[in-house]
Length: 242
Length: 323
Image 1 (cartoon, chains in turn purple, yellow):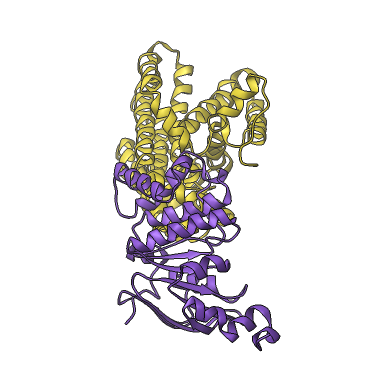
Image 2 (cartoon, rainbow over the protein chains, first blue to last red):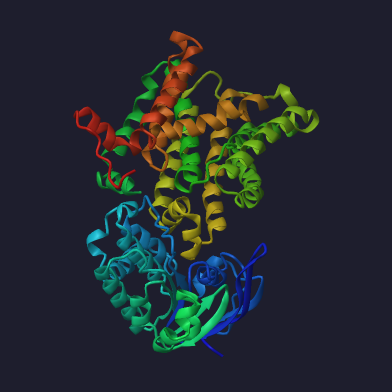
């Protein structure tokens, strides 16, 4: 049994099957990349893991504990943190207060939460921004703050939803380094990303989905040359080896 | 939250001065001014209590008259049915408010934003109508007349109201500097993000509601004892209680510690204080001022203090972050 087991998960929105029978297992300590064209169901799969949108059928098991019916905050307490594709900063709180809000998951003491938050801000290279209101941050820092906020709750598995989208090349390098550092500290990373440079560069294993179904799985190299993946992204004629 | 901390850094100077004035000064005042001060303390308690749920946690309640009314009726009903001293209402009232608050929260906290606000508004009206019409048990529209323990003497009521007001401000201050405060504000800023950070949002909204109902109920119990007369049209009033609590907080600054205090003082001064001089138009004056403040200082006098300072220095306001 894998560390995070996703078994035959289905999520429908009315007649649209956003996630259609996905089965995948993540191993502890790896960076697992999930790609797919727009609307292919990547974020919906994340939302099913967190139970923002419960799965209609199927089962999700984390460290042997079924979490399919648990509430979002319980899942977080069990050790699954996440960031959001459309960033959700706590706007009128400072960066430090945002990260402290995450750190309170494991402590009741404001002093301890503050120390933890400062340590994490240092880790994510956000120290110079710590007293800024979250709403005033540029997008790259907002995305990094989301990672920091999530890390402050000591997750064992972190779901990173398009952390590199909208960033420039320098900023992408910074985030890549941070994600590698997160993995090296023992946290399993489940990464959704459109930016190929990013996801091909950091993933140990990858999966590509389209229309809610798995179309390929393997190492980044295997995925990049897989005919189904090329077809999904570029169209039929490119897949025929043009 | 940032502003609370800077205020806290200014040490205990301002609260200490205010405290000494509030304790030492009133015995030298006339009865009418003492009356104003009692109302002020009552409204400070209510605005502070509303602010905990509405200003900090983001659950804007249009039905806090439920807790005020129950706080008043707790003692009233004991007196009506068993002739027990209405002072027991100081315990029974807030207790009743909390007992009612828990199921109310369990139902209404499933709703967000305007839907929560409207459901609370409907609840407030429901309580008013039930208390108006259920004559045999609740006294009906005639209300309940009790007796004033201290006769015409006002000072004892003032000191009781002062202690309760100070206690409410202190409790909110302590809550907002703990884990609870961070969680309340997180829920206000983004409920989904809060859930994603492992915050049980419904439970923490309840943790905000319970002290809020408690202190609103205490203010109701003080009102009951001081006025020695309550009726449902007054204590469950939408315009007179629920809306006024919101306006007092908005004028002073929602989500700040000092905002509700300042807002309540302004409200009582304008509403009651100048009524003797100008008549019922005082109500209108407060409403116009509230409208103007909400238009130009949406975060209230305390919340937009930086903006006010800049305006007086003749500099144009600087907007950070394009909002």
